[in-house]
Each structure stands twice: as C-alpha cells, then as structure tokens.
Image (cartoon, rainbow, N blue to C red; front, side, top):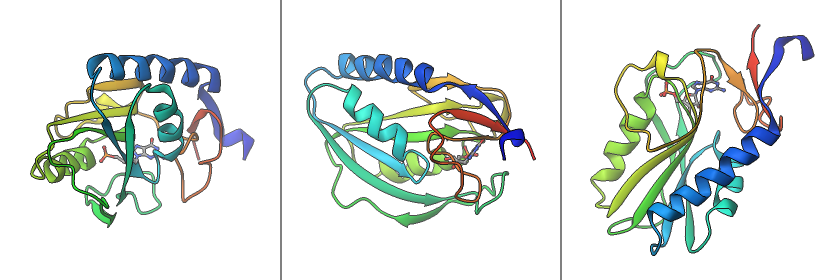
Length: 173
Ligand code: 5GP
C-alpha cells in the first residue's frame, strides 16, 4: 500500500490553509448565517474542519452525489443520492467540495441549486485541478491548486478506501 501513495499536501499545510479560508469566508459575509452544503462523501472531513474555522452562525446541509463509481476517471454523469433536507431560498449558501476536476459535477450542482433561489451561492473546494477542466466553473475559494494527478486522503477515496488518511497523497497504481 505504502509504495502507491506519495504525500502531496501535509496535514499541517491543510490546517493552516483552512484557517485562512474560514477567516476569509466570514470576512466576505460578516453578518450572515452561512448555509454550508457539503457534497458527500468526499468533503466530509474538509467540512468538519472548515465549519470550525468559520466564526459566527453556520448551518450544515448535506448533498449526496456519486460521479466516479469507484474508478479514477470521471464518468461525467452526476447522480444525486441524497438531496437537501431544507429550503435554501434567500440564504447565503456555500457549496463545499473536495475537488473540482472536469468541473462537470459542480456545473450540474450549481445549476440545480441556483433555481432554488439562494441569496448567494458560492463554491469552496479544498483542491482544484484546473488542467482537466471540461466546463468553466467559478470556484470562489480554493484550498490548493494541484497538478492533474489522482489524489486520495483527507476524505478523498479510491473505491471507498484511503478517506481516513490525514493528508492528501497522489495515488499511482
Ligand atoms: P469533476 O466532475 O469535477 O470531474 O469531479 C468531481 C468529483 O470527482 C469529485 O467530487 C471527486 O469525487 C471526484 N474526483 C475528481 N478528481 C479526483 C481525484 O483526484 N481523486 C479522487 N479521489 N476523486 C476525484
């Protein structure tokens, strides 16, 4: 197992960047309750650290999405496995994603949520792989821009494994 994983972003680097993101997000919306919408499953660890870095009122919602079906290449097809439990009309919403790769998943989700009438809809992604983009997506807050490699850890999986790594690693078979 160890020889297929190469550390890319350490736990310390992730923690420091999330502290900055939390401060920036609150500074951009000083007086609002922020509805944080986590895209499952990959963003669950990022979500847990990010909400604790955002001072003030935050609500948490979950959106279940399946797009990779266990492989290392995007199928392009987005399947909603769990929808939001409450209305987002008039709310300041922050969609939380683990990684934006082709952009197809986020493009789909942003369109789907926009028609529900949020006051603000922004996107934060821990990781961004801009070199692989197939559609342009406005990522308002990016943790780290990474090269076009398949990464695992800190919530990101390969066939449901590696989510528990405390850092982000490049996986090479
Ligand atoms: P996109 O639709 O932007 O191509 O892909 C978004 C989703 O694909 C992410 O939420 C994530 O689940 C998955 N994905 C994209 N790149 C990677 C990667 O390098 N590693 C892992 N584990 N998942 C990825």
